[in-house]
Image 1 (cartoon, rainbow over the protein chains, first blue to last red):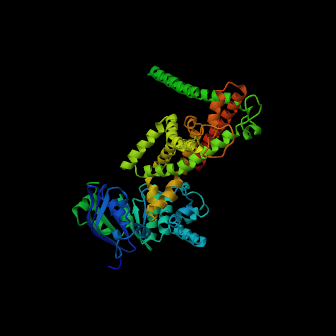
Image 2: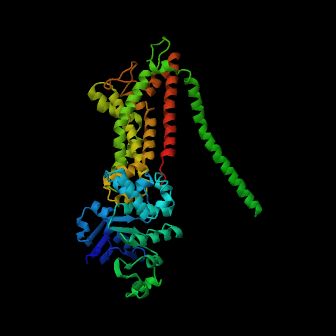
Image 3: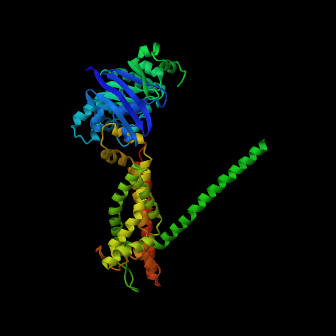
Length: 252
Length: 281
C-alpha cells in the first residue's frame, strides 16, 4: 500500500443538487499512467478536479468522502498546498499570455512570489522544458511570449509549467482534445517519459488514446466508477457489461 | 436566373454604397468642427498664452495658465480617487457577477452613468460647497470623480470579463492564492483595456463644464489652493465665449484648441496602447 499515491474511498461530489460523482473508491499507484474514460457527463472530469481541489472553485460545488494524497486527507489540507503537490494540465493550452516562455515555466514560483536565484530558475526552466520535450524547439526564444507557440507546443509548455513545481501527481483533463494528430502523438509520447518520475491521471474521451498510453484504466458511468483494472485486461476482457458496451461502441 | 442575380448584385452594391456614404457623412461634422477650432484657436496659442493668466478687458495679451493648472489639478485629484476605486469595483463585478451586491452596484453604476452632469454638480454643491461655505477645487474634483467612476468601473469589468476562465484556472492550479491571481495574472492581462478605459474617462471629464459651475466656480487668478475656487479649461471657455469682447473670444478659442488637443491626444494614445499592449489570448 505504500505505493499508493492517491486514494479515494466513498468519495462523492455535487454541483448544487446534482450528484455527479457517486461513492467512488480507487487506489492509484506511484509512477503509473491512469486513464479515466467514460461518456460525457459521467463525472470523470469532476472527479479529476476534486483531486487538486479545483472542483470547489465553481459556485455550488461540494464534495464529501475520503480522498487522500499518501496518508493525508486532501480536503483537510490547504488547497494551495494541494495544488503545489498535484499539478494540472487543461483541455485547452492556457499559457499565461502576459508572460514569456521562460516565465511561464516558472510561473508557479514567480506568481507565488517565491524569491529564487537566477541560476536555480534557469536550471528549473531547462529541466522542465527538456522533460516536456520542448527545450530544443524553444531554447533560443525563451523570452518570447508563450502564446507565439503552436497549440501543441503551448500544451507542452503547460506540461513544463506543471512539472516545474515538482508535483507528486499530474492531472490531465483531456489534454489532447484541442490538438492536431501530430501534436497529440508528441504529447502521448511524453506520457511514457513522464511516468518515470510522476504519477499521471489522464481524463480522455479517446479510447485508443487510453489503450495506447495508460497502465490502468478507470471507467466511469453516470457518476460511478464501474471498473478499474489493467488497461489490457479492460480492453480485452472487461468484467462489467457496461464497460463492454462502451468499449464496443454501443453507447457513447 | 441571370437577371435575378443581376438585380441582387445591384441591390448589394446600392446597400454597400449607402453604408459607405453614411460612414463618410458621420465623419464630416467631426472634421469640420476640428478644422474650424484649429483655424480659430491655433493662432492664439503660444508660450505666453500657456503661462499667463487672463488680462482685464482692453489689455492685450493674457493666457489661460490658471485654467490649465486648474483643469490638470482637478482632473488629477479626481483620478487619484476614481481610478483605484473604479478598478477594484470593476474587478469585483467581473469576478462575482451573480451576487446580489454585484446586481445592485451594477445598477447604481448604470444609473450614475446616466445622471446628467449638471445634477451631479448640484448634488456636490449641496454636499460639499454649502457645508464648507465656499466654492472649491476639492468640490470640483469630487464632481469630476463621480462622473469618472462609472466609466472606469464598466470598462474594467468588461475587459476582465472577456478574459477566458482558463487563465484563472491555470494560475489557481499552480497553487497561487486568489489575491495574487488577480494582481499578477488577471489585471496584467486586462491592462491595456483597463488603461484605455481610464484614458477615455479622463478625456471625458476634462471637458465637463456643468459639474464645475457650482463647485469649482472659476478664478481669474492662478491658484493652487484646493479649498478655494479654481479655474478650469471648459469653464474659461464658457465665461469668455459668452462675453461681449473680441479679445476674450479669442482667448476662448485658444482654450478650446488646447482642450481639443488634450482630448485628441488622449484618444490617440488610447488607440496606440490597445494596439501595442493588447495581449493576444
